[in-house]
Amino acid sequence: MMYDDTTQEVLKQLPKVDSILKRIELLPDFNTYPRTLIVRCIRQVIDAKRQQLLTSQYPVESASYSEDTIYYAIQEKIKQSILPNLRRTINATGVVVHTNLGRSLLSDDAMTHVMDIAKHYSNLEFDIQAGTRGSRYSNVDSIICELTGAEAAMVVNNNAAAVLLCLQTLAYGKEVIISRGELVEIGGSFRMPDVMVKSGVILKEVGTTNKTHLNDYVQAISSESGLFLKVHTSNYAIVGFTSDVSLDKLVKIAHHHHIPVMIDLGSGVFIDLTKYGLPKETTVQETVSTGVDIVTFSGDKLLGGPQAGIIVGQKKYIDAIKKNPLTRALRIDKLTLAALEITLRAYYDENTATQTIPTLRMLLQPIETIKDRAMNLLSFMIDNRTSQFDVSCINRTSKVGGGALPIHEIDSYCVAISHRTISENDIQKLFRQGNPSIIGRIEDGMFLIDLRTVQEQDLPDIKDCFKKIVLMNTI
Ligand SMILES: *Cc1c(COP(=O)(O)O)cnc(C)c1O
Image (cartoon, rainbow, N blue to C red; front, top):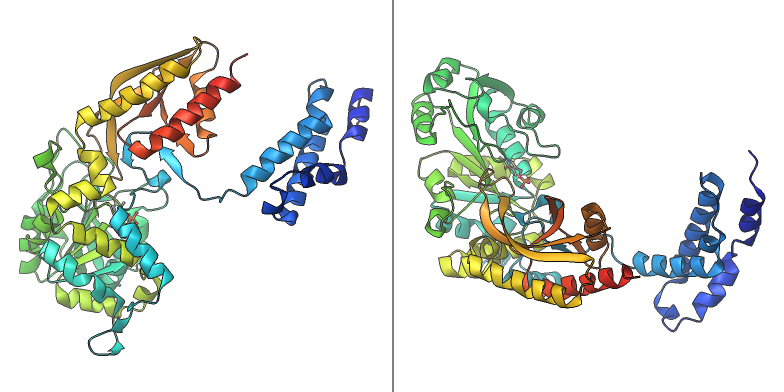
């Protein structure tokens, strides 16, 4: 392939690594960046420019390949490259438990404890009273039992691990009877039928997608039956001509046949949300009181703690689970355990829980608080925009997320941003490129910042980012 003369010329004039390095060395904060990183960034930018030149379909604009342009691009790249890959973002989506954005935020008390445990030795597996080896689970199991009314409890890495471990321990090689309406997929790679196969149990589906009767379960009982499984239909709802079997009815019939029952609640809640105007979500306590043998739920969904899988139920089953060698592979880390214990302790007093656990606080905050925050942001934007930008405060709805109350919309306020010439997708991208990155959503051709999930302390960063966007786009 032949390149035109301009391309050849520009290629020849691309700056050399050494000459850029000399300029970078003059920067006052040069010493704060590792040299290997600087050199790598220089190479990457120059190589990318060369590639761009060789493959571009368009006439070459030599200005975008000048040493100055490349020098500034490299400076940006170096600044970017010292940021951790996993970093803070601002959740302006309105989805409170957002799995892609890290689900639940930890309370201040939980964070303080995590730091204490991280920086010091601890009694993670040491019994201080007896002076002998102890169990890491004993740090939280009695608290979980007290809060839920369960006989025994244990915790693992996440709820997916809890489900896998419980199925394997209780029903390995046996049939697990489950309604066809509950064979759920929870995003990513968690599909109930696949998890069941991997845990070594045999899936025995009963009923239909929309209707399963008690008799369907009874008909399926045989000498091969190992377990009845119920799964919370976390991220969807079957509505219309439907019926399913309540947990207490299933427990009665199962126990009559000496078969244990397990329920995967997905997002466990300890608080009756109807008191706060949200729809009914069966609490863990109510679930335990049916006499069900095993209950599993997540630590970082509605509970508002760290990533964890919590298992509660009959002591004989929990003891068997603790002895399963797989438990070691799925065990909870000490920092997670530290955060979980403090989150759980907040639930001893409901007001403490709803005020200190961020997930609950964001979910239950009064609508006026959200509106005030929206108006605060709006007035800043009005003062700092150009006339090209349209900004307004609008009443919209947000979601719980995390597979809880999937079809419920909660009243919220958003700041809506649009621009005469910049598309809503480009506005979304500009906010996403902020530091911290601001993740909002698009509705009706506008970029929305939903103030339900924006923390008070996030506001200055959003304002800064908006100011920069306005400056960059004012010519
Ligand atoms: C979310 C969910 C899981 C997985 O829980 P993780 O804590 O994310 O592992 C399993 N089952 C149900 C019903 C869920 O909603």
